[in-house]
Image (cartoon, rainbow, N blue to C red; front, side):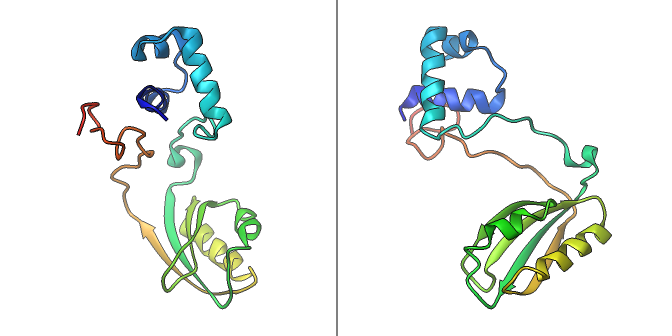
Amino acid sequence: MDDIDRELVALLQQDATQAYAALGKAVGLSAGAAHERVRKLRERGVIRRTTVEVDPAALGRGVLAFVMVESSAWMGDSAESFAAIEEIVEAHVIAGSASVLVKVRTATTEQLQDVLRRLYAIEGVSGTQATVSLETFFERPVSPLSGAGRRLDGSDA
């Protein structure tokens, strides 16, 4: 990825509905050239999907919890079992005292308790430790401009 690709990704992260003409103008390309670059970024898997960010509380999923899942076996092959629990929005195999970290969104703590019960039904799960979030300060996507020799303001490091 070059600097123009990184800038295009950053612009799309801010507003994925921007026209290719606007994207091109922002990075000094024609609309066609911007479209072609974005198409190639999709083909290479840099842009995995285009989506809408929604307020979970507005959809009745205001309870956020992070659950450390302990196991008696390797859980790396259990992705489908975790994905089958609709309230789990992320699942990560981790190193440490637990095997998997899941991010759960529910409407109530009673529903969270039900998710914990269903986690125990997954083969190999031997324990859980849940932490309920009281407030989220911020969530952000990975910036294509940071860590690449550039500052977030676009200047060189």
